[in-house]
Image: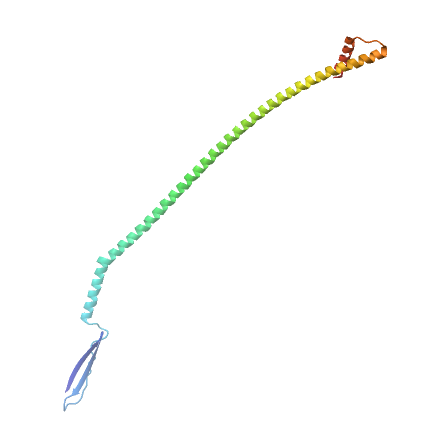
Length: 197
């Protein structure tokens, strides 16, 4: 018979079994080697530890982590939706302000056009009044100039007719030797001068 000595050495997660056999005196030597636990089949306590860790992690995820994650995702989704709604509201407000601005611009343009038209009408009225006043002044000055011209003409005509009468009277006296009557000479000169006009 043999004496079997089993020594176990553990390093990290692996185990090594060393089987040493020593023959007993007088017996034949037969060696049966023990291969140890199967590397594929896990032990019961490893299964228990794995299942316990899985259950703890599952409960931790289900009870603590997933609700926090869901809460964070819902908050993020709500913030994004709120930002979109705020952007839509801001865009609508901006469009309303632009429409209001354009309406105000149109009103200001219309008011400016009315003021320009009113100023144009006032200027036209002032120009018409100034032209009428100028025409009246020119008419007055023309009438005064015509009257002065007529007075000068009458005076010159009187002077010329007197001079023509004197010259005619002297020429008739020299031609006939007698002095014609002053009234006859004046009538003849006036009829001649009146007919030439």
